[in-house]
Length: 124
Image (tube, rainbow, N blue to C red; front, side):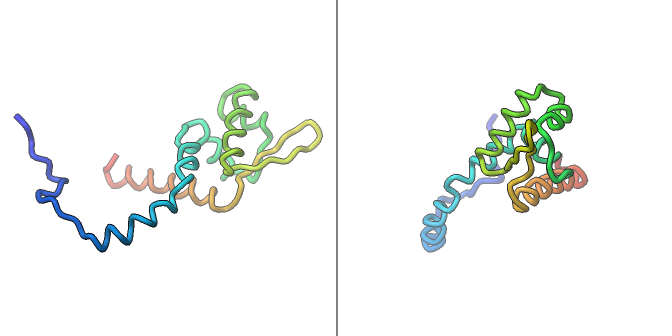
């Protein structure tokens, strides 16, 4: 027996003016998916969150925080850096990472808040 979907329009129609206004703007999102792809990985999200808690962290500290090797931590940090979410500086033989800017800090904190809000409202 097939159940009826309640979240689908029952008639096929569309607002042509609305579609014509919105469609060209969709190109504004080009490349943004890479940002979300980088943060969609649990390990990279944990690293980004750790970098919201501390201004910067050495690769070795990141490795210990996430419970991995320095090679694995370095790989994830490089991914975040290539995605323009993190930046680094070298101090002698040490490499320190921080979030690229306040926007990344806000994204991570907003995502965390949203997740907690869903739990408190019983939607998760």
